[in-house]
Image 1 (spheres, chains in turn cyan, purple):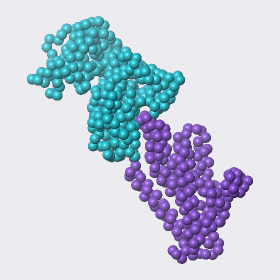
Image 2 (spheres, rainbow over the protein chains, first blue to last red; image 1 turned 120 degrees about the vertical axis):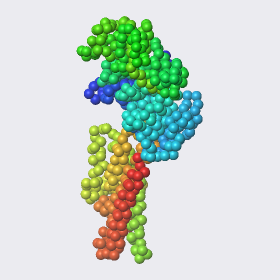
Image 3 (cartoon, one colour; image 1 turned 90 degrees about the vertical axis):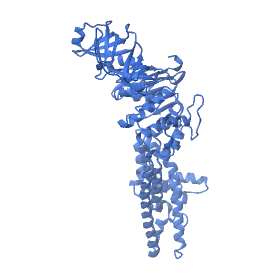
Image 4 (cartoon, rainbow over the protein chains, first blue to last red; image 1 turned 45 degrees about the vertical axis):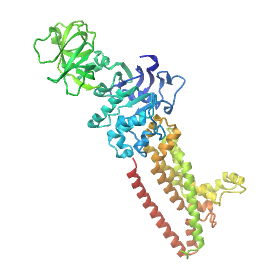
Length: 366
Length: 228
């Protein structure tokens, strides 16, 4: 992460009952999630970055300063794209005119540093909708058009404020793949506000964890998820996401081998995978159990050597354990939740080598 | 219809002229006022709104009286009219226009303000994130989205100007072809016992009012179907 492409944000202001004081740096590419419970100030930060609200502070994208002590660029002079919770299409304009609002109706081809009209229409599959009025679109279609409209404003930074929260579950599942494609096809950095960890898991590379107007932590997704000192790891359904690559395919048993840093997972896989595919795995802390010796005979496919990196008490009877995969513990991180009884009986401690048995692995395509 | 005296036609034409000019002026000055009333967070906003709404409550004669003073030779109108070589704006068509504008202002401002408020801040914010300057956002988003409010305001402003009487009588007098509009003409006919003409004009006004209200309702329905 060089200074040239970092997103650097610092804001202070009032936010209802508490003070907003946030500061974070995000990489200049990929998806950074602003994650936290409702009302923690995520949307306020996004609005301040867009210049829709004027908080005191600093906002710098690469070497472009949008706001500091001296200057405050008005929203229309900041190259942002903003996708709100509701699509907010202009009701008096057709889908096409909505998409072309920022270029004043001109259809422009793709060029160096410019996203073309055709590409956006293809990416979001809105071709059949172009001549329709927004009132005649479904919720998911509307949100797709809103995303396309934001992209066509040629932003340097795309801001998305819970773009799925106003949609029902089925429509969410319809839009998510588009967002994933956005992530994979565009070099454009995205700041994505969400309070839904499942969404963040699928989309984000980097997480800024917020609570009550401040930033608790900021870093790569896996790091933030697996840090036992952060609230995410202590949640009932805590899990850790890992980046993996398909290395082997066992057609007879329908099992794919997915390599991560420090180990390999065997996962029942459909035929759709190819060697070299990038996948994201999610492993719940409840699905990992520990053993001192390699279990002799077990139906569990995944038993990986790991080292206990750190451990914290979770209430009175449980331990939350952070593991590093591999014999030396230098690989990817996992979380395991074990009873204090097992912890003591197995005489576990930080630095101890264990065998992690993983009962379940959730897969998401990358 | 040929049986109608030219007097009647003169007042009909004058009335339509007055209402058209007034409505045009009201749309031009009413729009920024409505925008400000819909958007401003100033504490004295409602005070301004109340001033705009005063003609709704005041007896037209009160309004007419003050306008007469203001437009007369010793008022602002006297000063203004002296540039045009006149002594006063009272008892002129121009004076009537000024009076009608004040009198019908709330009928135009209120629907437009409501339309701007119903739109909310969001569309303008969206436009700003799409690189539109405030002025371009206003022209391309706020105005088209508030179109139903403008139509309602224009129709109400026009109709209300056609129907005014008290203010006209106070500041316009009764000069044929200059300030003698329909409502005053009816009054005159009754005064001079010309019941036939009074009947025709009054009946015509009833039909006009009915058509206006009916078309408003139809328009609103159509807008709702096309709108957001």
